[in-house]
Image (cartoon, rainbow, N blue to C red; front, side, top):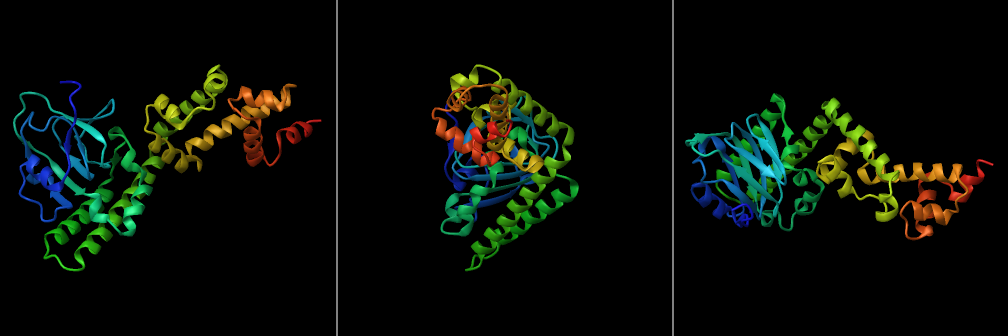
Length: 307
């Protein structure tokens, strides 16, 4: 059924049963070489949600994954990251026989990080909120690094547990996450044509919004609104903009607002209150504070500078 509730998998042990794997070595973490996993067509189709983190490097995976309204086909090696509570969907063509895929998957329950510095640091890895179609494409060298880290985690995972095991695994996971952050940064820089097209579209969307009645009716556009117009997840858009321009989406919105405000202040006789309302501000004081913070001048001081 199209509107069926996603299959929620709460524990690592439940995931192993779902995938037809032996019990995990640890209740809160599992690392899997996907070459050992076979899937029957239809068995693992459908939407699902995990109560734990999923970090995957996948190749040659039959079918497609759906996140939101986006489909992604895993025929090349890519990484994707899913946080607890995110819904995604796997779609498999009917009639296909059992087939292998390759790559690695790391599943980690938040309880594994409990009371460690990484528990709080997880929030800084924004790519866990990217959509599947915003996956990380690895170079051969980068893929070798990720596989090496996965293998090291697996070695420690199957070793005899002692007082050092958890700390070592957490350290390796943090290194893997930091490398992934670096590789995403590289991806933002190397996809020049695609990313500059996004910047051009962003400028067009902001210009259109600030020159329309939407500004007066709805106020300043939200980051979510701009991301939806670009068909990009909000975190991916902000991360991309920070790498390319040094400024996040909210700052780009504010920059466009200041640009429009300067135009109205310098070319019209509208009062500061009238300008602030026209720009979607409920209170003129809020507009004046933001304008001064951005320009170093109050709106009236900026107007007087033209006289």
